[in-house]
Structure formats: structure tokens, C-alpha cells
Length: 427
Ligand code: AMP
Image 1 (cartoon, rainbow, N blue to C red):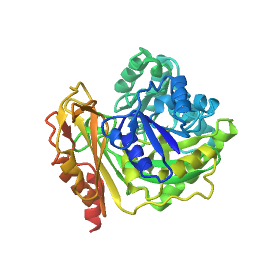
Image 2: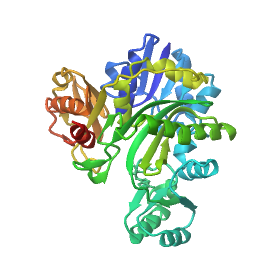
Image 3: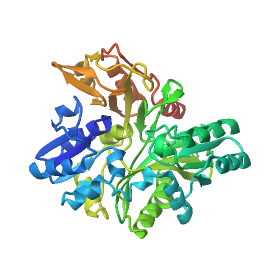
């Protein structure tokens, strides 16, 4: 089969790496890709917002299947447009992608189907939102309804903080995404990311992961797109995964089908594991980045048949095999990220780093320039490793990090610390 992968981050490098290993693949293309993805396949220049151009490329290059990495084209309905053009694609329709594109839509779906989530209300004006905040008290959470590139959530410790978040959103601080706002109950517990593959009718669990969103060690500093992750998440025991499927994922798949918007693709459930069990914080309609990187390292089975079965509605009785090992990824970012940062600094030592046992280096934001690799984004590399334990995966990943010579970069030194502490405590 000829495959076209869309996207340019570490998630797409991990997907390209896994797809390139499939015996079913003849030609693999990626648009727009990066310097690491270029080692797995052929890069193509395409504007992902121009669905007609993507379809035209597919026709011209006999593409059999498109795998869409990021959420923006999914929410913009690229799968609908490709399907209409007769091209098979992996991922949800625009209507089904509202699970990520509108937090209010997802909250209403939870309420209507008794899916456990934080208590909430939706607002289109500041005054009633503030009145609700005052009535509920702090801590409380304020969320922009639409896609806000990870900046749309304010966990407010005080009523004043919640009120200023409401003002910021309604004043257009997040553009269209903040035209509607969800205010919801603060949930206490441990967070986990849970992934399921859906085919419109049914779903199969993938694996769990935990990520580190804060930029500095000890989970301090501003939020980022993710500074590292590991899989599995110790809090997602077999029992908790079963409950996440039965109480959250499967009722969602049934509800989406019933409303005529069947959900196909990866459903990424951001969960809070509370004393009462798993509660949904949010859905994403694609693999997480950097969680995808650790999932792909642990996946033993061929990825492509699973993605095809999702698209074809054939997941019933489908089975995937996973390595029991732990996987961990450390994000190396450009100095200054998540604020302003420079592009173009050279990166060396990648080959030596990749020689360490169990290590795989995915590129998140790089570019090839006159025979060398240079930084080309905020998050730049995902130094990833498998190990028998999280501690071993962590040690291997940092051994590889220490072989990379990149004056313009930095990383956290404590990715996985909670899981490593747990392992230590368990002896
Ligand atoms: P989201 O973009 O919805 O995943 O939210 C970003 C982060 O905000 C989450 O990963 C949580 O750490 C936090 N968060 C969101 N909603 C809640 C909530 N209801 N209670 C506590 N923390 C939350």
C-alpha cells in the first residue's frame, strides 16, 4: 500500500517509524514532515489546510490510505473531504472531531449519557460565568470552548483568578476559541492519558501514559505541549482501564453513533483518577504528543492493520500485542520554550545517542540544512527508550540525552520521577 502521513512533530515521526516497519507498506510519504521523518520516508510539501491539494496529491501518487496526525485538519473536516474524494483516511470526521473541537459539546455528551466528568456549566457572556464561579467557590476551572493550542484551560486557585480568566477569554484573548466558555468543578486525583482505537461501532483499548506538562523539574513553571511522558501509567491498573472503557469510552462511541456522527480514529481520554474512579477531563481526537512516542515503542503488532480496521469499521475481535516493557521519552526543547526561542541552532551527536540500547530518537522540530540537523521549533527532539522498568528506560533516555551536543537546547532531568519513586517504594 502507498501511505501518506500528515503532520510534522514527534508524534508523526513515531508514527512514520512504526508505519515504515510494516510489511504492508510499499511507499510512505509524509507532509510536511521534518529532518527525522525524512529518514523513514519521502517528504512532500503540502498545505494541510488545502484539502483539495492533499486529495490531488493522493490521486497523482496512488495513495491508498492517509493517516492524519494533528487535530487541526481533523476538526477542519479533512477526513470528510478525502472520503468524498474517494480516498480512505484514518481519523474522525469533522462532526466526530467536535469531541476535541468543542469542550461544551463533550460536556453535554457526558451529561446526557451519564459519563463521569466534572460538574460544569456553559457560558456565552462574562457576568453569568462569574456569578457561577462565585456560587461554586474556588478552586475552579475555566476553559475556552474551542481549540486553543493547549492555552485554553485555567485552573484557578481563587475566585479573582477565575474571574480574570473569564474576562481574558471573553475579551478575545484566545480568539474565536474563547467566544464560549465552560466553567467546571476542580477534580482532585492523579491524571492519566488513556488511548482507545475506535471504528464507529466499537473500541479497543491501546495503552496508558502519563505526561509532564510543566516546563521545569518538579512539575513547576508554565504549561507546555508536554516535556516528557512514559507508558504504562502505574495508576491505570487493569481494573481502572476496564472502568475507563466501560464508563467513558464505550458510552461515548455509542452516543456518537446514535447522533449520526460515528467516531473513528484514536480517542485520547485525559482522565482524573479520583476516589470515585476515573473521570473525563477532556477528549482529544488523535494520538497525544509526546504520548504517541512511548506508545509506538511499546506496540509489538503492526500498526497499519489496526488503523485500517478503525477506518473500515472492523475492530471487533481485533487484537493488538504490546511489549510489557516500560517506555519513556524526554523532550529536548529550544531554550526559551514555551516562550520565545531561537531557531537554527545546530544539533550534533544524534548517531552516538541512538546507539544506546533501547533508545530511539524522534524528531519533533528539526530541519536538515547543508548536511546537518538544526532546531526548527520549540519542542525539537524526543529522546525515547524502552526498559524493563521505568527507571531503566529513564536511565537509558538520559544517557542518550547526554550524548547530544546542542547548545541551544534544554530538557527536564526528572521525567518519570513519580513512577520511578513508586518502583523504588515497591522494592
Ligand atoms: P485540558 O487541556 O482540558 O487537558 O486541561 C489541561 C490541564 O488542566 C489538565 O491536564 C489538568 O491538569 C488540568 N485540568 C483541567 N480540567 C481540570 C479539572 N476539572 N480539575 C482539575 N484539573 C483540571
